[in-house]
Length: 514
Image (tube, rainbow, N blue to C red; front, side, top):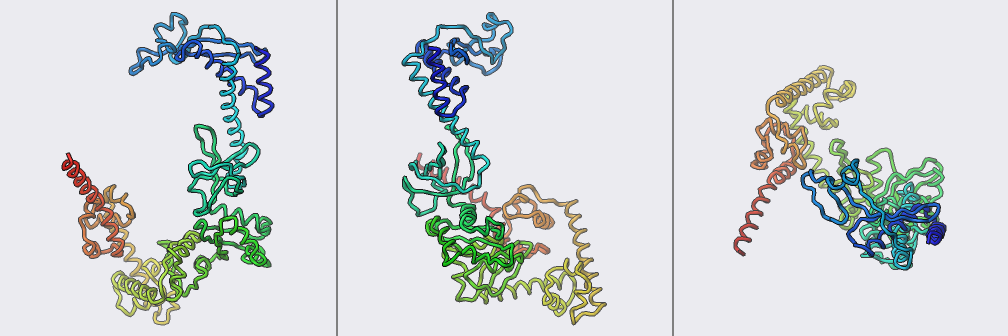
């Protein structure tokens, strides 16, 4: 029997390229299972195989439990022993250790061999998965290709070759792209999940990285370092945008990615179930980059709001639907690609909004600097939007304004600095006095500065804010808050009210049913 065991270990180890130790452990587990079936399923068994001779010994085991520890109960009397009884066998024994006694070993016959086959098969699969996971650990983010072996609850299991397989979950498959066994698919390795059955390679066909990797394969200029891919955004299976930048002035990045008669971009599109790809020139000027990303719509004007990291984009009325795209697709992809929040509107809407914002800025400057309408209008016309800019802008920039002389500039800068100092002192007083409650600070859409301003007006908790009306909120001085945002914050603060009402209604319905 010992020779048979050594032969099994040698053959399986060579065939499956698995270490001998793994096979020995599998055989020990199989022999332990066979022993339990012969005696009792509930007993504890350990089998030890000599790695050199193949001979083995079998021991019945009992886990030692501490009877004095609260909450400890004996669940398996045939495999457990109280400490007070165990010390009679071994005075040095401790809770958690095992008492062992030799028992007769089962023969490595048909039953043991069958059990060994099952355990070995399981151990081999686990070892193979661990080996594959180790090989692919450094390849996360790479493009992988394989053949679909089968479909499992909507997920596609693909054969990568070399005993490796991966799964493309349903949510990582391109919508409306039928997948059948035998199809050849490519996708990016996104992660290696740890599951009960072992490590699982997870591949995606919808991630933006797939688009980047496919273009890298199709366009030699990218792999040669002449063209750089700056980003990608996708609506999988429908449309995508990719930003490209040439590191060599002699190379046209868009033309290189399109290829002769569109061959390169068409190859990528075919791989992604006909997904249309817009190739966008990247620009270090972010406004210009956004204009490029809005293609094929033509942008008339752009206003950048650095604080909100957003841009207002004006297009001609006839191009408005094209700029937005079906279901907002074009504007959504452009926003994802550039990283900016984009607001598209017609020229008329753009002008109306610009005039309204200019009027608000003008009114605010009149109040904060104590100047008349004409002076505030000149400041707005010259591009000033706040007292901070007036206080700290280079003096020569203000001196260049035709209507201002040196005295006016000095007075405006002094007034701006005085206002900022007064506001800072006021803010410190608020910090030392009224401070917003934690629930107001943590309210969705709230920022710390606004929370402290509200606290200065006695609105300290989220409940206080919920009791306000939008008009009342807008009348408070110094909030610099739009009516739309004020309304959203009030409704967010009122959400617990609606939840309580819903709970009361549900309880009433349950009582009525009872």
